[in-house]
Length: 373
Ligand SMILES: C[S@@+](CC[C@H](N)C(=O)[O-])C[C@H]1O[C@@H](n2cnc3c(N)ncnc32)[C@H](O)[C@@H]1O
Image 1 (tube, rainbow, N blue to C red):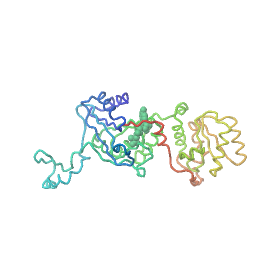
Image 2 (tube, protein in one colour; image 1 turned 60 degrees about the vertical axis):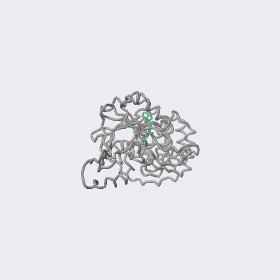
Image 3 (tube, helix red, strand yellow; image 1 turned 30 degrees about the horizontal axis):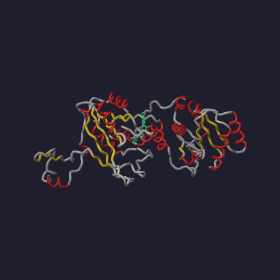
Image 4 (cartoon, rainbow, N blue to C red; image 1 turned 90 degrees about the horizontal axis):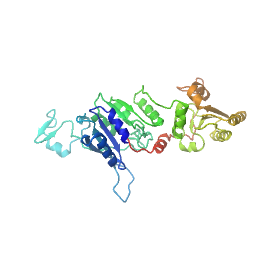
């Protein structure tokens, strides 16, 4: 993390702030590291995000908080608590009742101050985690609640400021920044996460999102983790991701419009037996056409596909080269265009086996990086 935090400091504005979120595994190490990089004199708060949840061990207190470390870059920094002020306690309101509603602005009462906008917020925030059933949930296990990001951005980023989330995940920070009319930049090592973020951003009206550094060549695609590769391919054909159960049966996704099975192989020289097994899977799904996508195919696999075709089963072999250079032709073969169905085709019903996506869960497991900013 240290070298990354160092770069974050480099790009941060002089009056900017960094909020680093982590749980109990790493909070103490990261505070020492941030003291080194930012200087302990620039430590501002250790914010506690407190949440309710299930799952307790009878042998210890229930773990119900995460830590968010806030450092400023310099001696002065932007901080506006007004939009996130808390309500005063009933007893306080009672004591100050002769002020509330009568006057505008801040009012002294002895040494204390009562602000009509509310109480100065504490460094302990009770915010609900994103429940498995929540509408905002995208299936990303570490997805943060929008309310948490809202609180940080609205108080610590001026309206003409820029928010950077260098571990963007499914894009919560960017979505909230966009809604709050701040400029934003997100970074993520995973192309799947970037695509997920882009889709989510489009839903909140960010239509001109620029994706930089996505895989663009055969070599880039070869270097992807298997799961990332599969997601990239399915995204490229505007397809539908299969869940794990269908994946185990040899179907990794479906084409966008006709919902025909797709299998993805991150390999060269895909052979006869792959075609043979896939034919069985397609058949089992009640379809007569399916697509295998891979870097290359052996002559045997082409012969096997020709044999299947003669028997009424159309197994199409599509190379990654074609996906990169002749995507239009691939769309025609799949009965879809980049924006939807080809004219004259009717949408097929969704196959029963398809139910939801597993991409984000798998992605997180494959990366095992619990630390984020
Ligand atoms: C815990 S998730 C962030 C979730 C996010 N806060 C949200 O609410 O959607 C962490 C992300 O960091 C990304 N990541 C891990 N290592 C990275 C690196 N070295 N550079 C950029 N992103 C990285 C992972 O791909 C993952 O999407």
